[in-house]
Image 1: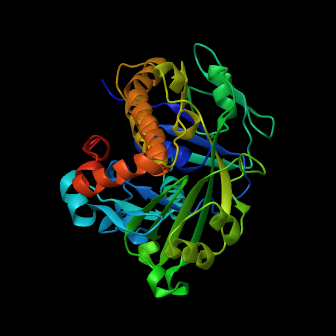
Image 2 (image 1 turned 135 degrees about the vertical axis):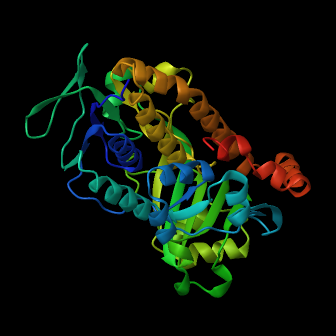
Length: 395
């Protein structure tokens, strides 16, 4: 029995949407992608991709493109944010490649997006429509029907809702409530390393753990640029769905009470900080929360991740490959394929969501809990930091 060829609409052209569209197009399906913005602009700064995520990019034929734009740090260091003491080290680089069959990469989010977009544009059976807002769809036994911005009614066999944390389509499928504020605010900045004092430059991933805050720094763009993220306790402000609200270095430093001088220097030296308030949803509780009938939820539309395990993009990339595989299985109807996708993905996504929440608690610990954390890190080192269940997925 030959693999079926489906007509698929993907709503949203972020990382999750483009990866889903590319995976489905490479599997032979006819794909239309609808993005509400009229032109793409760099959103976000840096992104970490574990071997579980880079493996998906390799499967999508993007290994050369990844090698051209990413950095591949030799190790992850965990340090105290208050005195810069080294607490633990996880070797990456060649060790990650040898252990998991794929590299640990760090890159600019804009570079990842461009890589996926370029890959999609090379697929003749894929079409991309920008400036096209879709916030509702109806499905029946034969198709999903929706109206585009120009008033045209379209029908496809399957829809992938990849419209992010504030997904409009999710509410159509699940009828649930909006995301919840986490009580954390995040800041990010991206600068050329040549513009930083030498002592602030870095070729490795460093996580700095402090009371009620943490910071992460790592190289991108082959090591020429440095990405920094600082997450602090706070209510935030501005538009909740705006990832690019300007912030001053003083605002970043204000939430890092007791931070080591090197971190305070970094906050001032980076400049160009932008902030966003972190929202999320409870971890998935069942497969029903990842789709219904002919509509599948992908990435943050299904399972937003707190950024304490560096797996938001990783889980979206895994989703994309899984959905394409299930839709391509001979003998499965679209509804059966969507159900199989949800069954395959929900428990893993829930586990990552829960681990990320737990990491946030440990990262921001103080007092006795912080002392226990630091001691465990120094004694166990890589045995605590390495996660075969996470990085070895799909190998």
